[in-house]
Image (cartoon, rainbow, N blue to C red; front, side):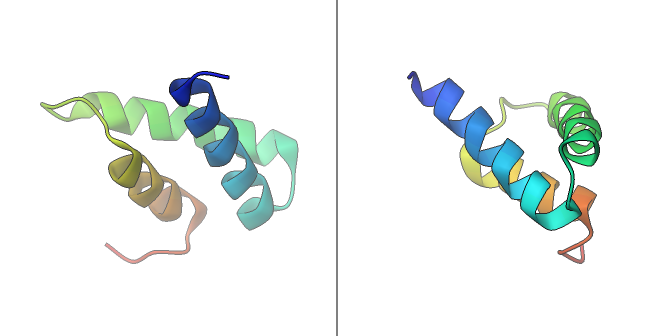
Length: 61
C-alpha cells in the first residue's frame, strides 16, 4: 500500500470513528478534500487531519 493510500485509509477510519458511520465518513472525506484543495500549498498529513478534526467537529479552529 502506498503512503497516499495509507493516509486515505487512516483518514477514513478517523472519520468513521468520530462520526459513527461509513456514509458520514464518506461525506466528511469529500469536504476534507475540497478544503485541502483551497489552500495554496499541497496538503500534508498533519493539515489533512486538522481539516478532518474540524469537519468531524472535534477541533475548534
